[in-house]
Length: 328
Image 1 (cartoon, one colour):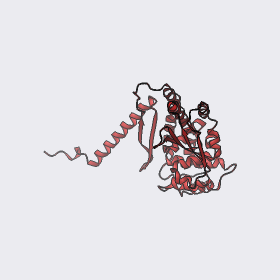
Image 2 (cartoon, helix red, strand yellow):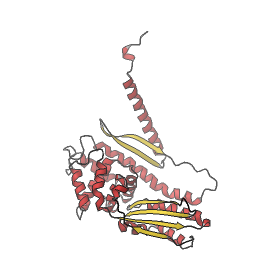
Image 3 (cartoon, helix red, strand yellow):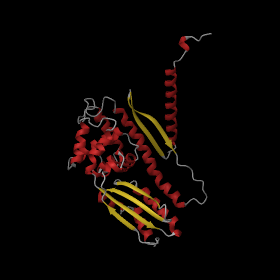
């Protein structure tokens, strides 16, 4: 016999219920993983009818290494990185709270956003973001997450605006000032808004680039790789690093190539006094090469916005304004 109409559920309601159930399971799983200090956290922010919301929370684990003879140095490296990874985890959780003040109608250029006033969505969001970035380690974590595309565009724009406000008290490069003015007017609220902001700011970002070639003695390769891995982890966390890519030659064994890019010569100079670079120089002093290292510095002819993702360019913009050291 026919089922009563009141007991029937429409496909749309069933889909909503299933979606809600999936979201609840995802959030519950993420909380459980967070309690166990999971190594990394990724989140996505999307616009919905109710505003900006946290719609995906995915926790990933590093695959367990089951190989025999696992290097003790790699184990030590993981332990040293555990505190910074956990700190990144907590930072991304705190940044998710800023979504409460970022509603669809409270965007740049609107009265409800009310930028520059002590009342409005902008003031509330700025207070939350500044609270999450109140320490230099938190700001370093933020730059790393931003370069890796794990910070929402709304948060990146707000951080850029706050940093411009602080930097303008002394001096602000013309492209940064122009980008800030357009952001306040709401000209970067389109889907390509962050990319347009990056293109506008790019001319004021100074880069210091170099290529390196190293020919390593076969019997020293394992030691070489341990030192380089430590150096890579440290370099990629430096506030003015743009790129640190390396690999072995496809045609010549034991020949390694590096491509490095920093925000200005200051970024390279800061890199050269890091503890891991000091360890690298000590290794170089033990004659590990079959030929003298080849280092070539060059001036790129392309824009930083052509070579990097918009989030990387915005991170370089913040580094240029001493965001890590002085805050926003």
